[in-house]
Image 1: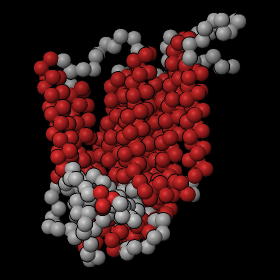
Image 2 (image 1 turned 180 degrees about the horizontal axis):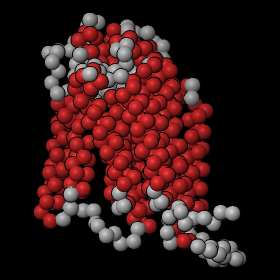
Image 3 (image 1 turned 60 degrees about the vertical axis):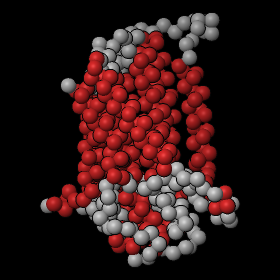
Amino acid sequence: MTRFWMALALLLALAAPAFAQAQPPPVPSPSRVAPGGAAAARQRPAGRGGAPAEAAQGDARGGSDEKDAGGAKAADEAAPKGFSNSRMAALFFWVFAGLTIAGALFVITRRNLIAAVMGMVATFFALAGLYAMLYAHFLAAIQVLVYAGAIMVLFVFVVMILNRPEDEPWALQGLLGKGLAGVAILYLLVRLSGVLWAIKDQPHAEMAGPSPPPVAVVVKGGAAEHPGKAPPREDAFGSTRAVGKVLFNQYLFPFEAVSLVLLVAVVGGIAVARPHRDEDHEKKIVVVS
Amino acid sequence: MNDIFYKLTVSHFLILAAVLFAIGTVGVLMRRNALIVMMSIELMMNAANLTILAFARYHGGTAGLEGHSLAFIVIAVAAAEAAVGLAIVVAVFRTRRHADIDRLNLLKN
């Protein structure tokens, strides 16, 4: 039974962005170029889909100053409280918060290590959603990639190495498991083909201008659907470019130091986990347990 | 009363981060499996990151982006910590056939 609830939670975490984007905005056409549209966009139900539009709105209102974080300042003007006031955003906050807490409780209460790791994955996905709600889109992507992708794989590998034969294998067996897997794969294929279908051809002349359009791939319903009318500014708060500018200008040394930390961690991990043979050491370390 | 549910403020995110950090602390203190302890440490780091990002959103502007840089570095350091910590857990398990931190008392008095 717990497996069912965990699978449900995971599915919810994965499908939540889709639902957030599927919400039709009550404002019929949030005009991206009009300066007065910022107030309208502020009331747009913003899950994960609404937040970047809001940031871009504030950006358009703030005019075109070329400072590093001009867009971020403008976005801050547009939403002085810093948080969206719509009910949809609140609903998603509570969903993600519940998932986070539930996953964390799962981690510290389960005896089964794999179950704990799965609760951890749910927590990380929900936290990525929360980061996106906080306008930290770049960090949300990094969270999914690094935590849910890399670190969790590391944990799963170690669990697999350490564990004796598991008392409870994780996979759902029988027809139910196959049906769930089929539905999940079908969903993935539908989303993927939808994205691929929505990609338009872009002429090269548009890319060769002095200021190239920031996104070459135009996804229907995405933020860059009308590139001709209003090319989206990339300096929006929390975007990759804005974070990258700060990271590579002011924080270049910490960034490089982090690369050194990662190198040391790789070497140290290999050195520690390497099986020590007896000919490496004259006397074997006797461990009294 | 409904404002608590419908109007998001920075306090929502901060309280959530505090709860998450508390859960991580309880996991570190109560559990004996070294892997669960490490996962709880990751939870605490994520709670810290959530706090950083909430304040970054609250302040906005360049200061907020500096917070994003800090969160990025925290994530990288957490990855390094996980790699080294898991290597240590694997090494300990190889020599002692368990990863129970209550029984790892070789350095005790």
